[in-house]
Length: 119
Length: 106
Image (cartoon, rainbow over all chains, first blue to last red):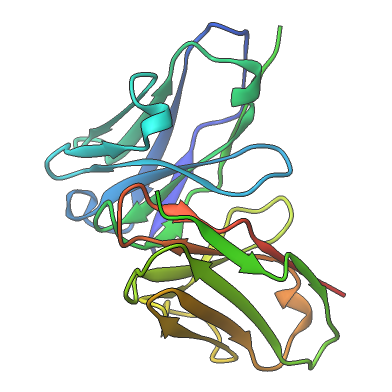
């Protein structure tokens, strides 16, 4: 069965960077892409962007461009999402999710990774 | 960006009730709409794509309809495990955007 397993919770100071991983199994990793979604505490879902595991083509929401980088490693079927220059309002749960195309629906979700930004 | 709105923002219902949630897009999106369910402390779960197609394994009491700008998610007979927050999402145009959510509680 399709599984997306994310790395564990992180606590970071403002200005630091964080890199969240998402290991996929149960399907052909290169045949799909990975979408990243942010959810601040008590808030809704926010689309951050998508990366193709086949071509590494990506598309970012404008508010994250320049501060977020999405990558994939097909040798380990793992996707990564790095956020730089963290701010306290970046505190959120980050989800990876499978989507065949960037402008396409999500069919499977990771369990989420809580990133807390605090001094 | 395409703005998504949902109504109501919350509702109270009982087991067995028929529940309808509405989602509206700020411009036409064809049928490029998905619905997700999220329970407290859990990751979202995918329910519907292409406005009315059920994801694999989703119970048939869930249904979706609509096209253009107006969409609905219907739960024909609410079950205890359906108490959750529901989000719509448009994927017609970048950036993909979600609605603010509708909380369904007892």
